[in-house]
Length: 259
Image (cartoon, one colour):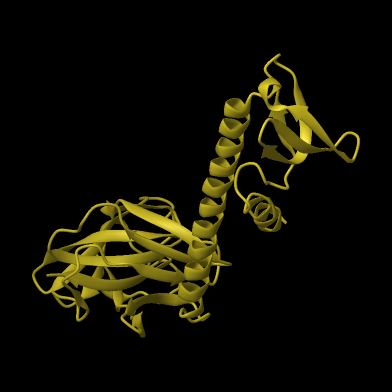
């Protein structure tokens, strides 16, 4: 409706000053005005269509403040053209978002666009390394029976997915309402540490997770679909997009590197 009304208003001004069909104020030099649909300057008179009386009338030109009338008319037209430009830009942005969204699969996961291709950022194998060794962590699996300190690790010193663009853009399709973001991964020997874990000495299900989160910007594109990208260019190193439940070792790690 908003776009329809703007289109009508702009059409109303298509004839230019003095011939507009939108209701305008025809100002008189005594400070009063007439609400008119349109007006015409004819030598020494101004002919106008009165909105109040629904008929054509005339008035001496010397009584009409044409400068004020034309100035206000021009301002109104400029304002409507500016608004129409904003609407057009919003429509273009919405079309671009719809086009972008249509390229992302509905299956849960993390994706990125490479030209005309949609690529999957594959999840890495994650393990919890604690005082009883190293245990592969399956999503939604019980927390390993550990005490004290532990680390959440990715196998291998480097990710197989490498970006040279320091500001990569990702799309994450969530299956459930969960937290997500980008973490800076620490490389140690032949593994990459995603986060540090601290288990409560009595209740082993209570855990504190420490991860090096990177500042991100995000935008929701659909139901459970988000676009995310780093707030600042990433330095060279190992990173991961993570989807997690706060306070639980329930995490998916989609690793990548910047080189």
